Structures are given as C-alpha cells and as structure tokens.
Amino acid sequence: MPYHWLKIPSSPPKQRRDDVKDKANGKGGSLVGAQIFYDATGQAYALIKDPGNPGKLAELLADLGVTDQLGLVDADEKDAGAQPPA
Image (tube, rainbow, N blue to C red; front, side):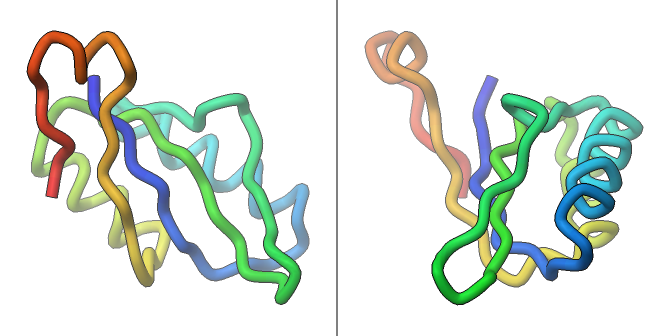
C-alpha cells in the first residue's frame, strides 16, 4: 500500500495530530506511527498510508489542506516493482 508524506497546515500540535489521525482513519487510510512531525520552521508533516481509493485520497488531501505531497512505496513494494504514486 503506498504512502504519502504530506505538508500540512499546523495548529496546536496534539490537536492537529489527533485531527489528522481521525480524518485519515475516516477515509480508509491511517496516520503512520500515530504522529505528525515538525521542522525547524514549525511546518507540519504527516506520513499517511494511502486509503487505496483515489477518490478517498483526494478527499483526505482536501480535508487536511495539504500544500505539498510526496508519494512513496515501502521496501517490499519497491522490490516487487511497484512505483510510487504521483
């Protein structure tokens, strides 16, 4: 199952983490590690397991206000020839 690193707007860290987790679960995906991450500038990032449905993924990205994303596959998927999502 592909993954997406998402650059997202932030708010109070614990509240935003819980919001991202709830929204991802509600669309059939999940927040990997049940955590979001912050860089030195305070920008928030989340690693999301793809819900496996393009429509649900698009809804999730819109719900989270994603400003940038990077599609990824894990080592097993890469070894099997899978390509990261666009």
